[in-house]
Amino acid sequence: MAEDCTHDCSSCGENCPSRTAESLKKKPHELSSVKKVIAVVSGKGGVGKSMTSALLSIASQNKGYITALMDADVTGPSIPRMLGIHKRAMGSDDAILPVVSESGIQVMSMNVLLEKEDDPVVWRGALISGTVLQFWTDVIWNEVDYMFVDMPPGTGDVPLTVFQSMPVDGIIIVTTPQDLVGMIVQKAVNMAEMMNIPILGIVENMSYITCPDCGRKISVFGESCVDALALEHGIPVVAKVPIDSKLTQFADSGRLEEWENNYLSEFFDKIDENLKKKK
Image (cartoon, rainbow, N blue to C red; front, side, top):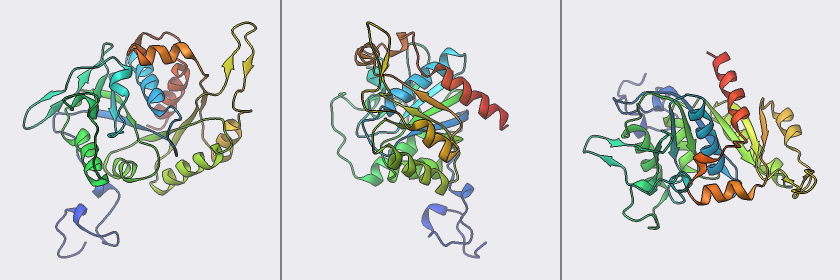
């Protein structure tokens, strides 16, 4: 350890001999308790990350786990609307309390802190990253078994902050069945490897549409290659979510927790089982 080390790793350079991955981790609020943290990521936007995060949180809560959902997409928060949350978060000078959904999911999002839901957040990257970090350090998460973090797209400031500062147990990659899928998955895989975080599974959204007359699955965006990609990268669990207008209607109306056909329920069970095996 350097003789003049201040033990404040945020102020030192990458080549500091005292700087380690664990030393960068930030402690949650002293009254918080979070057992598992899973980040939901993608190399690009518009693939259904927020829907995936919400459905996984609902599946976890329905299985009897105490569940939290952190909306880390500060400039494009959509989680509260999907869960029908319109009230603002409460707190004091020392802490913020998450808003609790109808089914009991603890939620923190920029939209529960704004005066108006449609107020834009016009901030630079450092301020956005700092806000996400405060979602971890300043919010009292109450006895949480599973926390899902809905990440903004890409591999920029916020993902880096989350991966370096929070004890992430694994990531779930979200994609769609299009030609660019290989590159998108590869970016997410490469970042996970750089940060030494395991990939728990991959979700392919808009995978197909079911014909209402004959029940045949139609691949609107071409045949899926997600299974081959998962095999190539050693990703253990795969889920394919169809295009479903009714699911979209439930999300748009804030009634997603009422949706009975949760496409990611079995996917969550497999993730849960795999994480228990690693204990």
